Each structure stands twice: as structure tokens, then as C-alpha cells.
Image 1 (cartoon, rainbow, N blue to C red):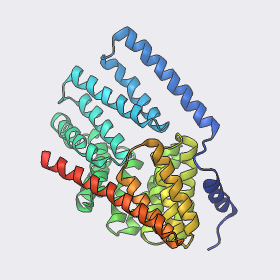
Image 2: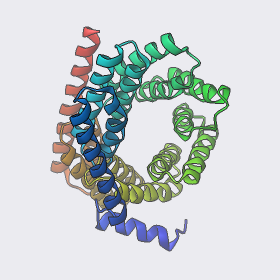
Image 3: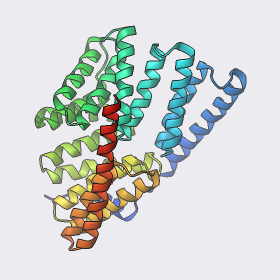
Length: 345
């Protein structure tokens, strides 16, 4: 299939200049972050470090930390928000539930599902008890529960929660939320209902483009690319993941885990289409980005396994075996940790 010059140019750009960011988004983000930091410092001095009036400042600041790839800083701010909300309103209050859900959502974005699941459950329980199971605030929590279930291979439960989230929005008379459509599309694709899944993902993408939310647009594009990959429609998968990668490089900090995911997806497409050398380069770029984030995670292990496949295709057996062993070590350790947590609960 013939591809446009734009697509070819982007592919070359992505592989030859990884982890670059455009200046305007970076400057705007840093300016906004600095302004929030000044507001936070002033509010702390005036109100004290544990006053609940700090919460509206901490939340957007945590999001900016996340976007700038300061993952530890983002987690610290979300945890601080939760501590303040619990102290001020009680652990069974809606504000505490909202802070709990926000921390869970951050862990989901980092693919730390073991950390996210108990938080999402707790937030849902509180919101159901205090506001009711049909309250609009429950939609986001149910979408998160669906994401966790999908990651754990429980597509049936994931579909129930994803459909419930969409239904709550509809009953509340709200416009469709791309976030809910995105997870619904991912679950439908996971169940092999590709046409319905693609329809939901395209609707999410249209909403994201209309709203001008570039990071949400990138997530919908990446999910659409994954839907095509599941169907082995690799030529169709390449343009959306190229665009998603370009957006993420412009909007996110160098070494951000989402950029690593983008390059992983690019590598899968290259590997499936016989471009082993390009695949290896994309996988190495993904691993390099994760190295900046730190930690031996299952995400890193899966990329290493795919890089091992690329090295095998290139005839580099020693490299392939070394990568395979390291990946298995990481995954075995993760499985042991999951079993320990299950026994504790």
C-alpha cells in the first residue's frame, strides 16, 4: 500500500530524532507549572500545609508533573491530596474518594494495575455509598475498573463496567466522554468485536480532535492503532501511531512512559512487516525512555521480549537470549509480587 510523503517523513523523524519536544508546549507547561507552584507556596504560607483549600492547586500541578515525566513528583502530589482530603473530610467522604480515584488513575496511566485496583475499588465503594451507584462521578471510576479488568484479561467484567460508565453519562444527559468511549472500544476489540470497537474508538478520536485535547487525541490514536494491529492491519496501524508518537513527543517530557509505549507499538508494526532493524531501533528507543523513568516493570519486560524477537530475526542470538532471560526474570518477580498481594488481601 502506498503511503503519503507526510507519513514517510514522520516515520523517518521518529526514528532519527527520538524524544524531542517542540518548544511552545514545553514553555507553556513550564510557565503554568511555575505559576501553580507560586500559588501553592502562597496558599501554604497563608493557610498551612494541610488545608483542604490546597486541593484545587495540587490536582493540576500533579497533572503537569505527570506530563513533564516527573512521575515521582506526580505520585507524591496525588498522595498528598489524598492525605489532606482524608484528614479534612474523612476517609468515607466524596472528596477523599475523588482523591483516591485520581491516584488510581495515575497508577493506571503508568500501568501499575496492582497499585491502582484497591484504590479504584475503595473510591467506587465510597461514591456508591455516599452519592449512589448512578451518580455521574461513578462513570470515571467504572471506566478505570474496566481498564484494570482488561489488563488482567477479564474482558467480561471489563465490558460490564465500560458499558455502565457510558450508560451513566447518557442517563445524566451529558455529552459522550471520549475517555469512556476509548475504554469501551478497547474492551470490544479485546473481545474480537472489531467493528464495534473501531466505531467507539473513532467516536472518541473525533471528540478529542473537536475539543483540541492533544494528549487525549494521542491516546485515542494509539488505541486505534492497537485495534488495527490486533487484526493484522499493519499498514492502517502505522499512520495513527506515528501521529500519536509525534503528539506525545511534543507534549510530554523526555523519557515519559507513554512515549515508550508509542515506540513499542511502532516496533511491533515494523517487526510484523519484515523491518527487523527498524523494529529493533524503535524497541531500543522505548527501553531507553523507560530507563529514565526507572524500575524494572512488566512493561519493560514485554518490550525486551519483542526486542529479543527482532534481534533473533537479525541473527543476533546472544543478544536475543540475554534479553529473553532478563525479561523472564522481571515477569517472574512481578508474578511473585502479585501472588504476595493476593495472599495479603
